[in-house]
Length: 286
DNA sequence: CGTGGCCCCTGTGGGC
DNA sequence: TGCCCACAGGGGCCAC
Image (cartoon, rainbow, N blue to C red; front, side, top):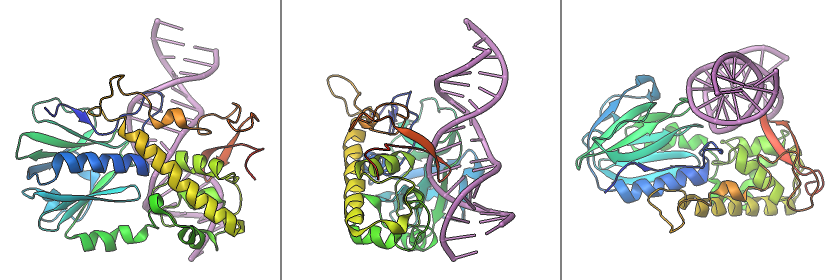
């Protein structure tokens, strides 16, 4: 039945870097697989991957999973008694549900065992991610999620405007700042800015009203499109042809520096903005 | 206090 | 072919 379901799995050439669509895809899978399931035990193989308060009910051992929540790139397992665990995947983290007898992948740092003989595994080679425990959802909100900006998937024009108006940093830096907007990473920042025809280096507060509306809309559509494609990368989401068609094939600029812009054939440029590789079209984006 | 830059870490890939 | 090293990125921290 549930054999080695990898909740996130991108083509090898494109290292999986979890942003909002990937985290939401993971959330939906976990909801389907684990809602209502009791966790009989939890074990931190690498203790330093579990951060924050580790007093009972640490890691939800003995709890049933009531629901799964997400804000930006943050994921949370909500226990039946209200305690919760939040998980940040960092840049190489993933979650896997597998039969208990199967071999643990390398870099498995936390393992939860379920009442029905499965395991939920947190795997993160680079350990930029982590797991936090919270006594309640309210505590999770006040400790961590209150620091995050509005969720990018439903970002309104007004929310984007208030996030950028006083910021003198480049618009791309602001999009990557999780306190301003939650859920956007390097890939979708470049894609959304290209789609909105705005240069990543533009000073955020200089964007005009029309650009706030366009950028907010493009952020939503880029993430929504990726979320739809993300569903097809799940191993249990079989199409007759197999599991190709991940979002990577739909990227227009990210990873394509030096190639022709799909819109105008001008050569895409690259630089470092916000200490991240940035790709943009000098013709389409202003 | 806002911003830019460095660093954490390891798998991958490009170059020789 | 095989080895080595630069590079990739989310976000915390620090110096300006």
